[in-house]
Length: 548
Image (cartoon, rainbow, N blue to C red):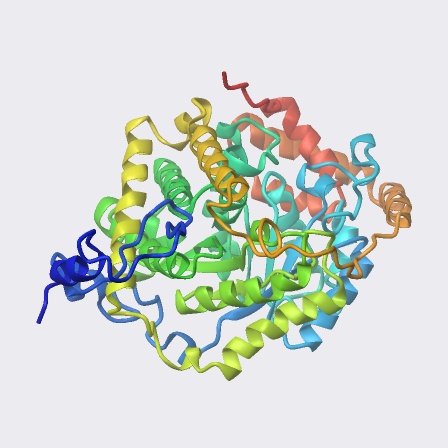
């Protein structure tokens, strides 16, 4: 039998000239150039027992659960949130009725930035990119008729995460629910805000302190809750490659682990509740290999570097979302196909939870119809394709295993580079992440502009614009929110609210855990803006340095 090199020489050498390749950029989105074919020769240093193993066993390359989807399908968690709490609550019930198995909440920009809906900076943005939540009163309406013991909820919130989580918990307590049975996730990954999304309030050090407060408090009070979802999604959406997304996200996760250990926390108490969130882009095999490499890196580092003893601490559990940045406004119906392919990659990569983007998201928030199509895409994959019947069906593929190894090595190269410069916060200070991502985004854009990378409907196969119905946010939402806030301030106990805010300030001054104070602020109907403002008096506000 020919060797791989002999075959390549017989087909692709200049002397052969038998099968000339078409002129095309075969590189994946991480700028890796795949070979025409992969064989056992590419896996000479690969050890199936060491690098692959079985599902549910170290190093978890094949999945963190033995049965994966044969035991339980991934959670179908569609991202939803717009306008008022009443409108989003109605959408939540619609999605649950359609077969969604978990909720994922999008908040509007004022909420993400810690402003009340009636703040001057909020004008024109209330309810536009998500739901407006300014106090426990909004949270009560948002989850009206939804049992927090039965439905898990993910909330995409970062700087104000402690306050929003406290409102959710307070709402469950007011319903008489057992917090030991309440499950969900807060994103709470502030480092990626400094790296990519830029929705920060306080400087990095106190911001990370607030995150570690949830690590310390969460396992004792809400043990089923994932108190952080370390997010590569926004890093990828900001222009990073798949390898950069993997490396920077895992580096963020390791930074939180180190800060928790510095506080004296037991790694095997907090690590099992850390979760991750990945962006699933267009390069099919790259995304599958990325998820497999992520599990392997996390397992090895948690066991061998950080000394975790509990196997649950070694398991990287993840939510995935199809890549919004890959969905152009041109020919938006084509995005249904893109989302289906990306979702299939997430499933073949072993995600535990998945959100599929709607085809119209480049134009506006999804309509109820486009959101339903996105959900049906997951259901078709789950019930009609057969891919959920076999665990890690691509294992042993020469290409997938080699690509998994290559992505792991490239990501670890980045992680070691970050450690050598002093860690993630040092990398933020010196602009390392911003410059790396900017270079990657520039390279990608140049490829699109020169047609070295074809995007159907954008730079090739272009046709006249097709109009689709879009979601319009009622401007009266802003007035509704202002009236509700006025009512909250008028009807709450002013003394209790003031005392709660003062106690929150004291935790910032003394360094005590902030979560009990945030929970009391929620019950006292302190507004989100009041809580964030009180911390600004101690922590100050962060201004990003200008890179030259």
